[in-house]
Image 1 (cartoon, rainbow, N blue to C red):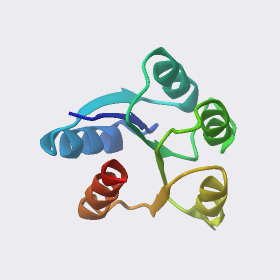
Image 2: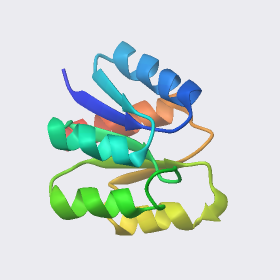
Image 3: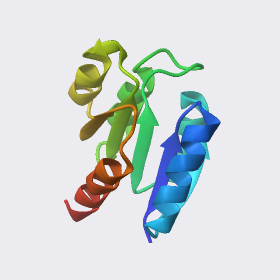
Image 4: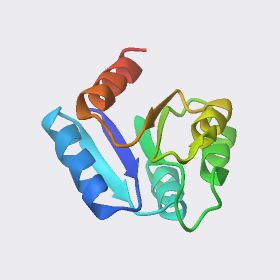
Length: 120
């Protein structure tokens, strides 16, 4: 069973992701902001991180940079509501996100992305 760390400030979205990922057979840990997410990852690495990229506590994409700079093999799927266009998702990709997904989330698209990451 793979461990997935979900970092998302909105509790309803975190719950939706947790339910879908647990039904797919994964262990899910959750963080409500980037600072807590980094602390959880440092304490116990996850096999995959799914993170929103616009959150409080850590400035914009600082968390992505911190993760990819300190953990070279980290697998990250970045999600964003795209309120500021697609620019944050493009920057997340440049900073090391393996995949990016625009909100509103389509669960099948997300689960396909998760399966791909574990296969590669």
